[in-house]
Image 1 (tube, each protein chain N blue to C red):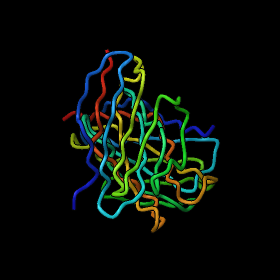
Image 2: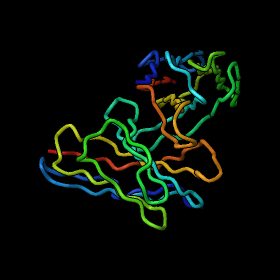
Image 3: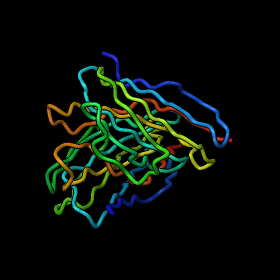
Length: 114
Length: 115
């Protein structure tokens, strides 16, 4: 049973560029959440997708956008990258329909903005 | 804004010692989860506590949820080098829409256990 997978594992971009990160949820899960984790900090909630729609959003600017596909996989897009966007981006999935609260995290994508 | 404060932020102890990590908030959470994260990896769930006053044990780890569901603690007995890592508590928003899954994380406690 494959867990949550994310790609790429590492990414280096320059300021002003755009980036797309990808996530495949755990088998049987239909809800995907994205988190940003700065070095030495706890993860911060960006947004959550269910039924291909953004259902809840954290305190992040519109430069952060996402998408969920019919197969439940998801993308996180960040436009006009800033140095402060350098972080570990985590994807977590959960089975919303069964109302289980447990979220399973992927290994993350390490983004470095130069 | 709901916040979770963890203490201490850093802990370096010798193998065999006991330790307690605290997670406190002024807000009520419907549940609280503890995760452990190793470098280069995502957080791995250790336990979920739901009921006020609940105590759960996982081998040498004991987790407690406060009676008012505002705080939690993690106690490790006879720590081992393999316990080294970042420990995160995360609360689930009580008043969010049903099962939206938004987790509010503490800033984490970095534990180093020296052999």
